[in-house]
Length: 497
Image (cartoon, rainbow, N blue to C red; front, side, top):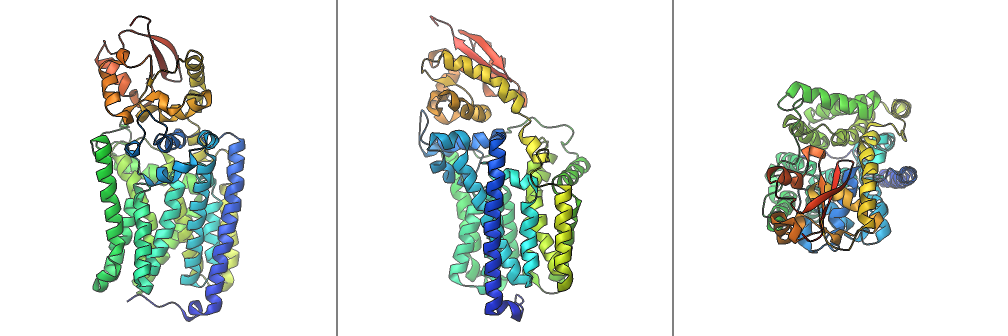
């Protein structure tokens, strides 16, 4: 059986204190996140990352497409973030700026941190620890930047924390309503990012191990997420005709490919670059504390080990040759902040405030909250020079545009399609993979389908149109190259062709 709460936590005054801490964290996170979002927006960094723009496109294309409809969700990306962004991308200003989508990111992270603070206060009885963990997460510039964008990671962070808390509550109270609530949250988690599959799977395994005598009372914990994954796989296959991730979408990096020592070093040094040693040390101590507490029969704390499960995904990806991306390691920063709470709660009460302030001060000193040179902020801008170069391609296309379809691969140029909206080129102007038979017909003979062709020639060795042109010298017959910029080439069909 799970260990009961300390008597102080079951007192009404203690429960009131936990709720108060949760509201403080929620308000603080929204204010801090809002201020950060405004700062990054004023610096034109909200949509610096190409995936931020591409995520907006996936939502927008459901209704703004040559072939609108649910099949536009078909992609390697999981659908929940794009479902939530459907309404957020309807107004043109929000689609172009990401404004309403950033609000979703802010609310998700704030709700998750608030729930974590509430549960830590209940579990440990330490209000200092419950406040310190979220503060460490919010003070990190990499987390602050991501929650200021339409990226899917902030939703992952929030739903991970909400799911861990919900499962923890479910295993203690063992009510039908708590099981349904936890199962529903796990379902949303596994539909957000693939790291959520690892977190959800870890939570389910631990839950079964802790409650194997009463499995029927918690069956929703695996039925809901399993059903969600099954529906996603079926819908993805129905819309694209192939299973997600069945094709490679990157050129393997020989430095990482099948090099476990190099991968481990990259992950550790990347984590330290993101978190700084004070937060990293706090997280590691917290992890040690949880293991010790689990060995002392406080088995419920094992659930919080699920926070570190996402690191398995970049480990496998980098080992398989995926190019190194530091943002894949940011879930470790969130995990470190929450785990540090348990380290602080294990200290004598009189030392907790002093140590909490010291760790927070050191973390802020090492990684200033609004550092414009933070690793994630810099990584998000690596493509900026190419984006600026592409503006001359857009200018030519807009000046000579006649309203006819433009053949382009959304798999490689979704971010550019969002950029082009500023020049008045709506998504329904582009003929891409999501258009099914129209796309297949255009691949057979572009000159019979379109006047314009856009080809990405640089990123990941070039897109599918570039590869097609390399294999088939007749593919672009009847077209002439008009302009190139930032690796993007524009072709126009010659008159009479």
